Length: 225
Image 1 (cartoon, rainbow, N blue to C red):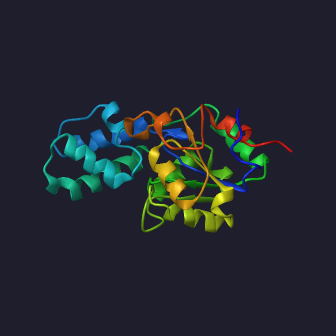
Image 2: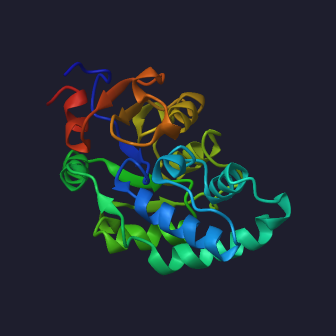
């Protein structure tokens, strides 16, 4: 596998949904519970998958628009969705193959890790704990941690500050064009996994430094020694 870094980075920022954990089942269950409560038609998993990646607000608004629900339902929909998701967080989610091995490899290579997601921080921390992944991360930043979310570069720059590493030596690992755009704007190298959501679009068309089929392949992207 070709290298794109001249040496191992100092730290890595790792996305959550679609990168470490397949949470589509959780999103679909919570959204459909929300829709049933509001008297709206349910949506299929494939529709939900195309809305994942830009935070709960976007997910709810896009879902309501898809079923042509009245715009005035948003405030109630937000409350119902949050309660529903909190009650089932992680129930239908699964850790992707190679994630635990990949995280161990990154830490063994001396990298500090931060999880950065547009998912609300409460849900992110609970999910990582439920799936046995929390111990790998020095920091966990949700979509409510900063004034702006990915694809804005601010969350990555703030994560780099917390990690005390320059962006050029801080690897972003994600699954979507939002992760790549944020990394490019922040000055971080970026690797995308091939199995995530990417808003329902082919991920190989995204501007990234490398693509991997498993997190266990990431440490093979820079020279040894």
